[in-house]
Amino acid sequence: MHNHDILDFDDVIIENEPFNHFFVNLVLKDGLEIKLLEWLESTDNWDFTETDFYTQYEFSLLNVDIPEELFSLLDPQTINCIKKQFNTNSLELVGLTVHKLIDGYKMGVHNDFIGKDESHRFLIQINSGWTEDNGGYLMLFNSMNSEDVSKIIMPLNNTGFGFEISPKSYHAVSTVYNFSRYTLVYTFKDI
Image 1 (cartoon, one colour):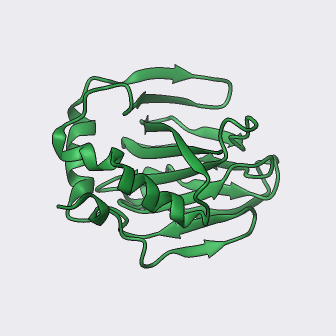
Image 2 (cartoon, rainbow, N blue to C red):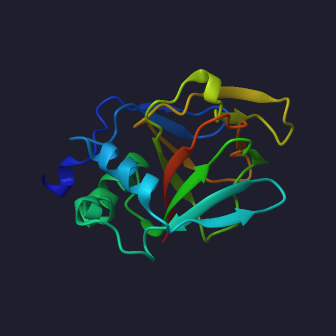
């Protein structure tokens, strides 16, 4: 498999409300999401993180040994393919993490905005077997108000979601039930 072939952005849907973002279905090709899930379910790299608005397990793919079959996730061609979806070549990868939310975990409303250190994020959901009863919905908001929901996005397996981080990029993840919800997170900054 050639590295530039691992992503499929043929059916991208671009939207501007409540903030600039895009969706894509079946983003990883050739069963790469299955190989990634198998590794995520078996690795012991997870670190527990708890803050005032979320609790999750996470780790950086930049700081661990990953299986050779997943090297293409870090390939410069893959990174450049993701950058193009944001219509800019002035981005630098600053993080590649995996998040795991388990039963009872959620993320409160937040915007990810920390200034110039992070400007864009691309998420890939790795959630084989997910059903609506499992929760873990990605929710977009018009404001910091948790009742001001603009959109609800199902965390369907192998779907992608990209967005520009800004003071108005409010989002959250609803409570997860009886499931392990995995998300691969590419983080970029404007250079």
